[in-house]
Length: 403
Length: 231
Image 1 (cartoon, one colour):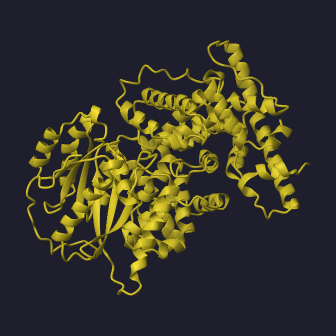
Image 2 (tube, rainbow over the protein chains, first blue to last red):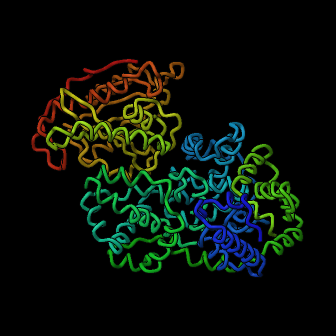
Image 3 (cartoon, rainbow over the protein chains, first blue to last red):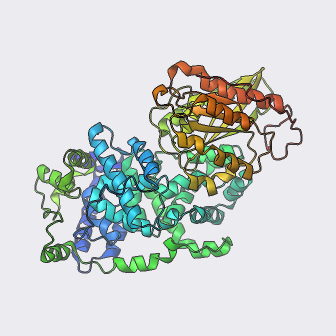
């Protein structure tokens, strides 16, 4: 096994400068082991979804965008060989949320990689608008909220327009469903899980926050954008998306509680009033120990599952489509065929209007570029290459040794 | 609209510095706090206005505000240090219906914002005013109307006359301004300072917090359109 300097740079946040060479080696071999497991899970028939979930949650998440493009669709039961057609532009002007979407997408510059050329970003922003309106059009029961665009852009940047549209469609009908009601009452209900978690773990902190009457709105943008709106490093956003895509839809609120608990000392030493506490908490630290927080969130979820919290905290009962449909959603993910089979099915259908992704068998850097473009489809042109370049920056090159 | 976190934290740490510096020799009296909520349609520039006032400059990139953002600035009025808290709210209707309510509590003043280049943002004002009423804000709570983006002269869709008439009918002073225009450097500041002055004159005995019951509020019916200025 190699452990060159390049690898050291590429392994990202898990390895600090203090890491010994031995540790480095262990780390690399663990990662390789994980990639092998993912590969195997993707190729079992049916797809071994439990292994994929475990990989997405465990340290380092899904490691690289190439892997995400393979695993994310499986986590959502999306058949990438049977995607809906590209979103059309015909609904644009007629949609009631068109203006709001346009306004929010235009202002979303920070979500795109630094250094991306304006014209490339604009192509992607157009696609972002199209995807959002397309999903809304196909699902009249869903209502746009500010922050939805922060979620969609993450998928667009990783998997490209068509796959993003399909994934976001599923996500919107499940994990995000409660946020997309005509009102935000259901969203509020989910926010109401936050304080009971704190109460279980740190009653003192809980009481402090109750006295301050801070409420839970500081966590609103965290919850409804899956932290996409508040984290400036895209890698952290991706790590959390790995986690949330593989978890119960309420996990995002457990994670919010974990952040508050992590900042317990800061909170308690701040003035006990709404403004001070809201202000402190709404400024999310950018250097959070994500891996640690993710495992804590999981522990808390196991120890204080939503049902228990709801009972203990006497939360108002409320019909949550997100929660009630989760079991079926999970069952459906168990029935997926591997891509080799899906591809064959597609060929058999001989649908010529769908772009058939090529077999991925990278042997060198140029191949990696192809691999990065793969998910984005060839229709994007310049913008696709821009994204591919970014993806390259994010993709550790040890991937080349695998698959 | 939220701002780049780095900018925000820089800005806020400098603010903390100004608040903590003068405390050394003085008794640990808390400065009074004036809480002002800023509302209006999406995209009218609420974030830019509040940022301009608190940071003294136009933010380069703002995004949609999700929920409620908070900014503050310490000002000095007649030798008294006063903390002005601005609550910058999301414009999309769904947020204000169930999320923003919490922030109407104990508000000392309301700033309604519309975009002079966007007629529908002006037409929404009655709904915003109604919203305030529903949160049972008393008549003594000062309200002002701000028409933003008036640097875009060629695109103006809401004339001053019309806006003035509307402001008069609701006994609010009207300000037309631009959070962006560098020539208006002091203008945004002046608008919020006007509100602060008004609050100071109105609330001589308000303590820093909590501001639950205000038995000392003096009712002063503001004479209409006294503070009007163009840009």
